[in-house]
Length: 262
Length: 309
Image (cartoon, rainbow over all chains, first blue to last red; front, side, top):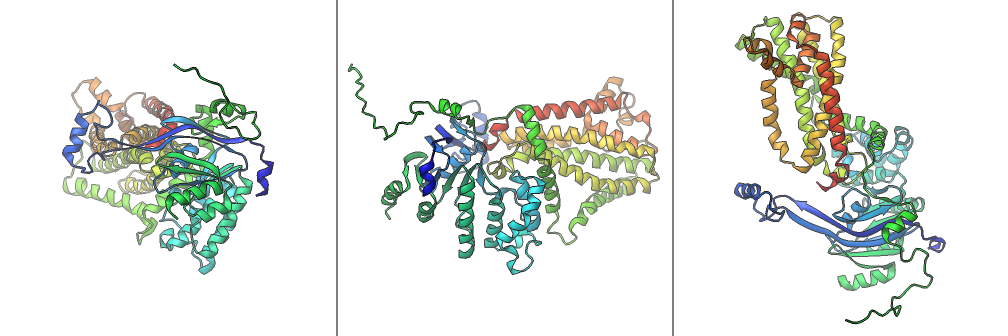
């Protein structure tokens, strides 16, 4: 891609020996019996393990520097810590050890959690826009674009119906349309490409390319090696929370495909 | 021990960048990068929260609407639920028990219904507050916003719920012979102070609930104890007749009792100032300001940790 040559090596994201640990309550034996819980309380004061708080070390000592204009793919098998790493970069998950430095506020593409199935599509567009930090005027301004982009109203007036009445494909399209309505400094996309039918997928890929141009740096998590090849010029390969490889897309993907036996 | 040799074995890429050799922190400082997810200053935090006011309001209204969206009568339940509540209390205490607790029936029924509604306002603010963070972890882990937006939004939802209940309360008051008067205007400052107090409380329990979700199980018992000692169904003055002045005053400065008494005083004709403790407005203001400010700072102190769950 042409924009690579003009890269002035301005860092936008720096991860420095980053560790993320999840704590899960009451998952010691798999049996959630009352006596187990009681003994857990009685053992209070001793360390976490004895109290049945299990630790999941999801990201282990990841370090990298991302520069302006880069599109970075994150690959790795399920549970390798890709999404966790994205959340940590966005500052949504506190780090156990290490630090992440960012230029501006990185944002995850996705508003699913802010939307409510019992509300109409219309109100969800507004709520989602506000949740992402858009002003009321911005939401009003982009409302029609969002609805048109989602194509929800192509088969009748669905936007005034509660979201629970939508088919899963329709709901996914609306969610993507809301999420993609905002421009971001550092944009992170978590497998968002694979939503909706073929026609919508094409449209959303195009929109992501647009967002990419506007954003300083893009992170893309995907299991689809083709979309990684299409959009990214650098790939980070995570396995068991560790950074296994970091390099140009082709190099890393070749090793990854060898590893996964494809 | 072998001496370390500086043979330059490290493979350096073609053009060494001027940033080579800098630590991550130095590199970040050089290009003005900030630590991701760091807690903003208190002033900055208030500014961010104010910037999200439209989201806070929209979120609270969305939650309110979503509650009854599957019901056939829909939003009519906003009024019907408190109306049925008041009906049950009237039936039990007014018709079956003929309870009066030292008051005439025309005072006691509105006294009771006001108490129940006002206490419910605080009670449900605390209950939703406990789960404000722990119940919305998905949202906290997906989007960026000052986390205080959640407990504040839930308190606001309860305030809107109470406004529907107030319609029923007006009907009950008029039905028992307390007609609208100038004193009804006092309802506005009472609600404002109680809302501040509730929000502060919600912020406090939200932080505690984020760390210890078990509090959601414990809270109903704490709240019920609080309710029974606050004089929802009886007048503290009448019940404590003959006890020491200090004991009565101690029960009366309880914030829940203060807000209930002020609301009754504003609304009910036969409930005069003699039922109120001295300096009642000052006490109400004290509770509202101290709990709100304290709760806000307490919540803000853990801002960067809420994503952990």
